[in-house]
Length: 369
Image 1 (cartoon, rainbow, N blue to C red):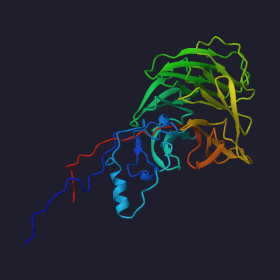
Image 2 (image 1 turned 90 degrees about the vertical axis):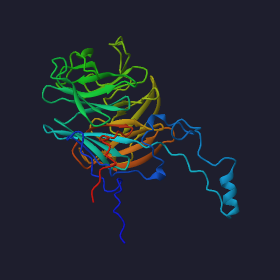
Image 3 (image 1 turned 180 degrees about the horizontal axis):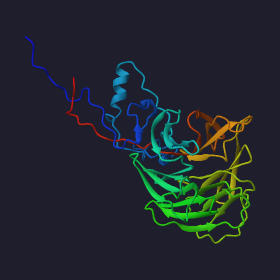
Image 4 (image 1 turned 180 degrees about the vertical axis):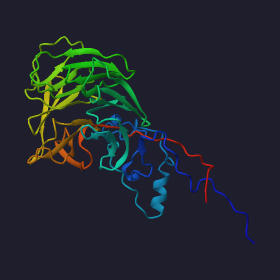
């Protein structure tokens, strides 16, 4: 006798539809559980000695060493504690070709693409907002600033504003909603917010020798603005009230800049191989790229978890070269090779926690056989 057919609601669930057709997300990508990855953990919360989360949790053992007693009776040795690992993180890469639509890719530390968001034009700069969103600058077609939230949805913050005509880089202060955009046609730094308020002038540069100078900006945790340029050549550190308008550069050469969201550290590239790490106005350390490597473009870099710094290098013998991402442990002077970039031209990148760009929840009772 054949019994009734039982339908299990948790089998062969239909693939959920995308919330936004411009957003692409691959739910099949997963992490090896041995990496102790928890997507709820923010990458900046890592503290050596505490592992993930806040540490000292409630525990899930049987209490009183009972599990070890059972192992002893079975003649087995207890496992040694697993070594602590830094929290997982992802890289957000802005990419595209001149005059064409662009993308922001989300990749793990091994270069596996976790998803991407399409943009109307190629972005030139990207910044993390409160560890839950991204701000990108698009200089084409009158200039615009766009926002990508933690679900992958895009929105326009500022578009074709007469005060912000060609934003080439963008920065967001740690724990702040203030956006600073660098305009290399108007030769100015303009301030706006994630609410899309009318841009206001933070600083203007007069008498620049270049029609479109290189610009790179970052905002430190204490509110200072770090600015690298080949106009008035050098890397500058401005106070938040713009009172030091005649200040001299801290570094003599132009370069890319980045700031840590958890400490007062910031870094800037110099020449073709150097990376200068500062705390406030004090130079802490100078790192160097490996032999045969040079900085990619004007120098792209971003702070990453557990006191490390990610940079992009190229073959020193090539004018452009294939970008290769490296990670420096600042304290231990160790270099880790991450992965090469082989897609559209990389214009900028930032490191942050993983955002799930499609979080539709499938109906557990919908099945097909």
